[in-house]
Image (tube, rainbow, N blue to C red; front, side):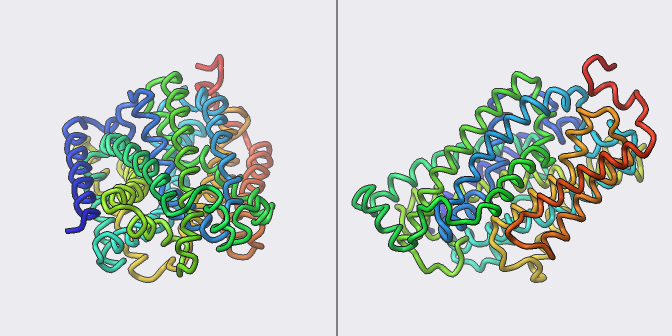
Length: 474
């Protein structure tokens, strides 16, 4: 077996052990969905950082920079802005009442099971699309490491992900996210100096990259409107995606949230800068790849020493796993907690609820794999699938969440209109609108207008649902 294969098998063995450890520590639904709400800053920040850093970073970002150059780096500015907003504006009010899911927050704030159900449906649909991108990237890595077909790799990747997430829930995700953050950090730290060995110094690096792509170091190589829209999608999506919002409930207090977010921002920015360098180097060393998404797997397998390449490939896999397992928990909770228990069988026993919880994660994990095997969604760069997910989450949830904790007059009719209208506008613009304007722009505008107009035209929400989220409330 190759050194890369050995590194992978050791990595997966540790992941499964962490899943079994989490199973032993999971005693109720709070443990399963939000890790008991007692995470400190280190584990909380690690799981936030690992969740943010997905195949969109290690495969998608590298693929886009390989294709168009450094100008994609403007989007890094959205990361500290997004997390500043989360800590300084959103978290102090959002965490005043701790729920198990984002749709549960929507029901508590707006006093409506219908709003909760709609939120759950949007999460399920969007998550299936997003997980598809991660599974596709997993198949590319498995093909590089083990020489198996990409489809076989996708099946194996999906089954591993579903297995340990079903077993341990959020605790398994948190433990494995900490490991995955360390693997990503080591992989990228080793990749940069070892990639530089293939050049005669910084000047040679710049010259050879520019020879392969004359626009590689031009900050204006991508249209400004496109970059602005992408940045807005990442900014608002980072604030409103359910897998990140639920981590605010998982951390024990605002002190842990602030420190954890600082750790996450430092990690995300540092790793992305390292990946930009590897991506530019890949354009010089492999200028004619059939897809930019192949750049990172090819670099890890062909340019780096075998053991280091194995670590970097494990880091790519860690990025995908740390995001998919978080999405599985969020989407599984939407199916079991918000739809089944919230609307169908509220009086189910704890044992039955935990069984449905695990079944929900399994269903959500298998659905995107079946779509891929049926040929749905093939041929799209990973990063653009990630962008669509971020735009959809922003269009659907940013306004109901932020207006919900800052505008007392926001009500259930406004929230429902904002979610449905924002999601619809995002999808329609993606299908019919010009590509130079990201779908998040019409999505967030539509959502905001509908929230204000519909809320003012309909009765206010009863005070018992509103007061807990405002200073001086009950």
